[in-house]
Image (cartoon, rainbow, N blue to C red; front, side, top):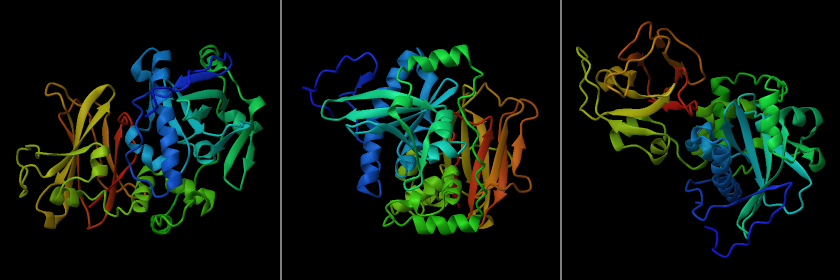
Length: 386
């Protein structure tokens, strides 16, 4: 929390200064190194100052939100500096530093060369903890970083000199409104597919917290493929905290939800009543997650279809409102841990439906990934273990 006698905000026209809120909280999640914890703190404080300002600037609260979701942030901050914000149809990445001598913007390669992570604009943010303020001292577009920036292989960052940054953030909004078709992202190479066995070997190796900089320990294409898969990124974060079965659904049903499961939005709920469904489990033995899809609320439930020996599990999507149905075209899809389809792995609403469901036989410790089309707000791919 900032002290009440914080230094007044300076008035300088070519830089945007924002006060760090007095109620700003330190991240309560665990991190494997002191450096990761410090990185998370700077990003958290910057986010709590910048996000409300963006929401006020864009006039509607829902036009600016954390990408992909606030629950996913620890699994980003464990490895890289930066926080992504989706603002209308733009994605911004804020990059905080406490450096006093600001000569360049440095952006981790992950935010530039992983297509699903890359942003339109990268905000250079200076944090002054003693004075209680941050300043946005410029920004660069993705295209600028790729075409004019310098790639630094020693720390896998792109850098751009201060005089090449755009200092007035209003230029961003005006240019986007007047020239929405003008490209501000450059093309990036596709990330190769990572085989399951190789991914598990990387998780085992890099999950050791004695490796202080896991992002530099393996070639970038392997690292990028591991991080781009939200489930593997989350699992790597969990392993570095010593949590080996944080995503185990049978464990949740037997012993209760883990803290991480609750942070990701899961809860324990009573089993839905399905006429003709034979089940030997007691009421309450299902896990549930509330989702916002296309402006409406739905519930995804996961529960054993029959007794646990048969290993048949049901994934079921239902509207939360009793008088609402699932629109035609919605899909519920299951994939293997390495994102491969299998027979009868999806259900599609051909007409308005009360529910979509997929039954699947799973072996002990097998992982499954769920998807919904259209994707829920804040969706981040995750692996559920059985």
